[in-house]
Length: 242
Image 1: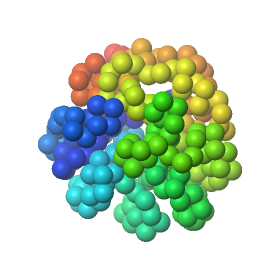
Image 2: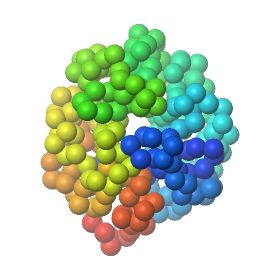
Image 3: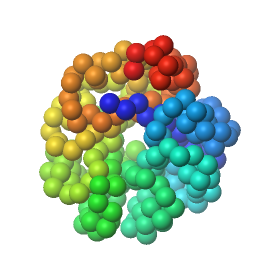
C-alpha cells in the first residue's frame, strides 16, 4: 500500500482546507514546486495534487505551477480539481500528468467521460467524495445525482485506473480515517482504491494495512504531514513503520 503525499493548490500556494471549505484554508508553503521536490527527496514515487482554484471555476490560475512541478520532478502525479471536459483531460495528459482524478464529470457526464476513458485506458481515477453517504461534486458544494452504488456499477465495467475515495466530513480534520466506511466501499468494487480524509497518524495507516484488502492501493496524507503528526521523512528510513 502506497503512502501518497498531497499538495492542494490555491493561489499558487500549498494550502489545506477543513472539510473542503475554501474559506477555512491555511497556507503551509508558498512554494509548491519546492514542496514537491521535498517529497521526491524523501523517496516518494507519487504525489496527489488538487487544484482548488480550478475546482471553484478558476481553471487557469495554477496551470503553470502544475506544469512546472511535472517538469522538475520524476515522481508520478495524480491530479484532480475542476477537470470537467475531454479537452481538459487531453490537455493534462499531453503535458505528462500520469493520472487524472475526475469527480463532477463522472456523475454529470458519464457518457462523455467514457470517451476519454477509452482514449486513455487505465489512466483516469473516478473521485468518490463521500459526505453523509452521498458523493459530492462541484468542489464538494453539492450532492451528486448518482449514488455510490450507481457510480460503481457504471464505472466498474470501464477501463478506469480505479477510485479515489475521500470522506469529506473528515478531510482536513485530523480525526482519523473512517475505517469502517472505507472497508464497505472498497469491498463493493473490483478496482483499486486510493483513500483519504482525516488521516492523523501512523495508527491510521497501519489500521488500513490490518484490513488486508488487496485493492486498497494507497492512502493520501495531507494535513497530518503539514501539522507534523506524521513525519513522512522517516517513512523510507525504517524509523517509522510504514
